[in-house]
Image 1: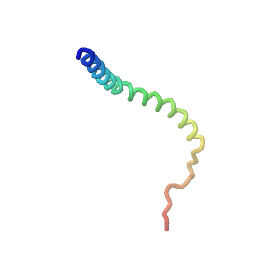
Image 2: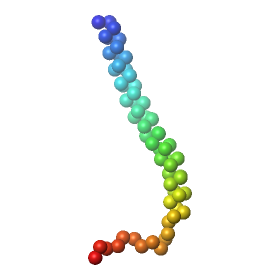
Image 3: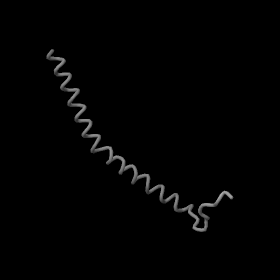
Image 4: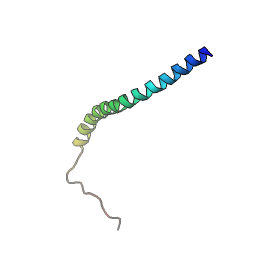
Length: 60
């Protein structure tokens, strides 16, 4: 019974710890990756933008 208690405590502690760590670090990683890829996308897409390209057209 003592071993099961120790395993249960370890599992519960790990779940609580991982929940808090994911809550903190998932948005941080998202921002870091978004900024790293966002700079590349802006530099690539801005080269191909034509200001005279028409917007939406009707299907009539």
